[in-house]
Image 1 (cartoon, helix red, strand yellow):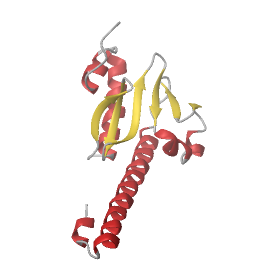
Image 2 (cartoon, helix red, strand yellow; image 1 turned 180 degrees about the horizontal axis):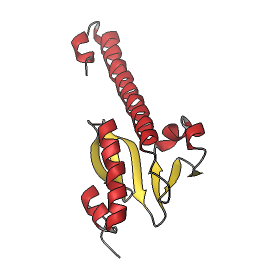
Image 3 (tube, one colour; image 1 turned 90 degrees about the vertical axis):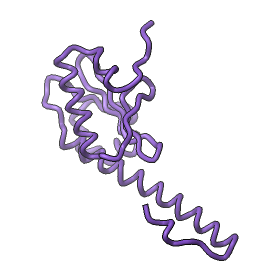
Length: 144
């Protein structure tokens, strides 16, 4: 059995050059839409995380790119994704069609906003607890 990839570069290196080019397009599109996201490998796939939480995953296959925007990213773009083969929280972008980079950008931006909103609400919640417990808090701590 082959060792799992340590990073996205090593993941992509195992594919033929033409597939590497498509994977790099998807990677660059995600990076541009989420410049603060961190690249990693999770579940054996290239993954982008923000605030230590996954934004999107993607993977190369023989005839398609698998794109995994988590269930919310998938559900919120149901209409736009309807022309593609789908599974629960996943979509297949076939290699014989142009890669929908604009759609990937929209989904990633949506996931970034969703991720930041969740992180912000948790931060506000912690400071509210401090306020209730101690009667004061530093509001400057609420800024990102």
